[in-house]
Image 1 (cartoon, rainbow, N blue to C red):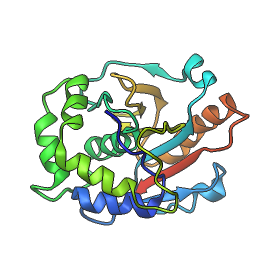
Image 2: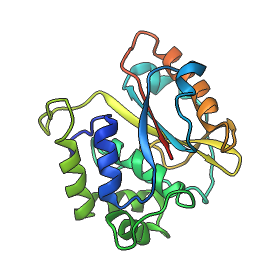
Image 3: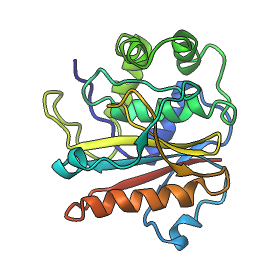
Image 4: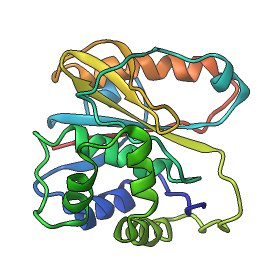
Length: 218
């Protein structure tokens, strides 16, 4: 099964948040650079950071960070092609549920209640068969500035999510069943610490230019 790819467009993703059932001031914001000046444009509390980056041989051969078993982190093992955008958003919202309120009975609330006690692989299969979530993803994938690609076309872009959890900076990648730790962080330094890690992603694929960084903040 293959879903339509999701455009890394804050307007689209923010509409997605609203349709999922997110309440309050939480929005995605573009970050145009990794320097302090650009990072300082984010003034609210940071809950998570999404990185969109190109598939490459270097990315497959040189993994960054260390996989670690932490059952207090909710991981969804992706089972659907091209669903990485939705997986990354779900990783952000589910693991930041103490910060980000969700409407009772909403698409997100319903899905979370189903997957609480599941394994990462079981969560991935549950996501694959969650009709309301699929329909919402497809609707959002058809919005944005870019022409919607054919379903059979394979996109070259990947989404991962970075969060702060119990003092650790975790990367959540739908291709992996375990969270990846990149050292320590805090609520107040999550953005800056994530930017340092993203610089390593960029350096690893220095011949690539299509990296995007989106911050989920209040």
